[in-house]
Length: 238
Length: 238
DNA sequence: GTACTTTCTTAGGATAATCTAACATAATTT
DNA sequence: AAATTATGTTAGATTATCCTAAGAAAGTAC
Image (tube, rainbow over the protein chains, first blue to last red):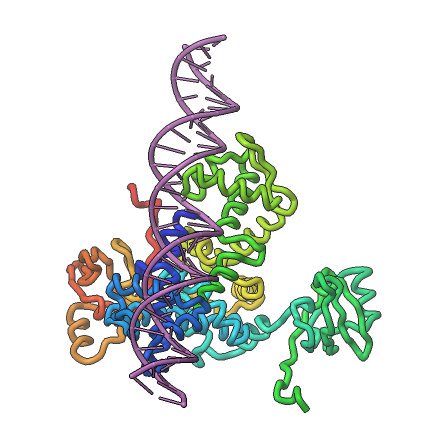
């Protein structure tokens, strides 16, 4: 909602920079830590844009006094630029941490989600998010609730699995006829299933249960709650 | 990170629409529920843009088959448009719910944050977020941890308060000289403070404690953790 | 030290959004 | 029914991105 705001608050952030400019800054900062010098080419690669786009962005950042850079030269952050980059980066880590350790999605996806969301989060939300992550991560507050939370967060509906995933059935919410049919097919709590394949439009999905291949419609698969089994990736090639 | 993606995945979402187009769709859907007819003017007002911008957007949405609309006529969503709007809206509510009931920021701010973030969240994250909110909201899993969580989430550092806010001191993390000085000024656990005013650049902030006005630097105020006291707004005019 | 390769910049064009100003249609009032 | 007001559209400009193509500078190789 509020498109104009999207321009004022969404694209342009606390730093006064657009989301894209913040990305450039963040990238420069990251590269500066890894490499001796920061080059246009590297920035372009990291941000997945072409070099001319980088050149233009650098010129703008230079005008803003956030980097020092001469034509054909290397790029360095000024103190001011470094400060903003740090802030942007901390927001990013906070989010990535949240996605990974609270929402419990894979590290890679957590990072990618953080990238997409990071420029749009207010400092306040960021602080609150940090409090939440700290609470969940803190070992003081251990106890059953945390196991409960993680169990809940790790549950999926059968149709959320990817091809090849295996999982154990936790619960079946189907009623009446459907429930009966699913039970007959062998779906019951504790049973292991493997998602074989989705049909082109994702609709019927093929599942393996007790050595049988069964075809389910998405609406049917939605009633089945499962807990994925971690694949031992290192065993994959044996 | 990944600017090009920002275009492919950030601005253009699961629906294949840009964030702004999703906003238009969502707004139309909301207005359609409240009003007899949806007019350009209302959309413009809601989205905080001028009418010509709306006209242009509507033309595009029409081309995409998401709304039916004739020049100078009213706007209606097609089935396809309605479907997308619903999806967008459910993502929005999920986020707003999260910001309000898990991160525990005010309803208004929760909604505004949701608006800014909503277009950038994958369906997967959305589902996980929903699981988290459900877990926190569910009354089954009651018990002390929830109180602990809320207590933690409701804590603020003194310098996070707004002018006029009152709060009770929960903890002081200062060390050595600073701690001594704060204690001398009357800052201690259980004491009530009121944030009077920030200096122009937010730096020294003026706090009232035990009828005294005290000036603190931000770094000092950061060491003081407080629990805001809800103002009884309805009493304000008496 | 000339020639090739890599890296970077400039120029010019595209797109998606915004806006203002001016004009067109519809609705309301008299 | 004519005049006025409200609403909506078109035209044209602006901004922030991106891109490709072509040329310039720097680095490397023989």
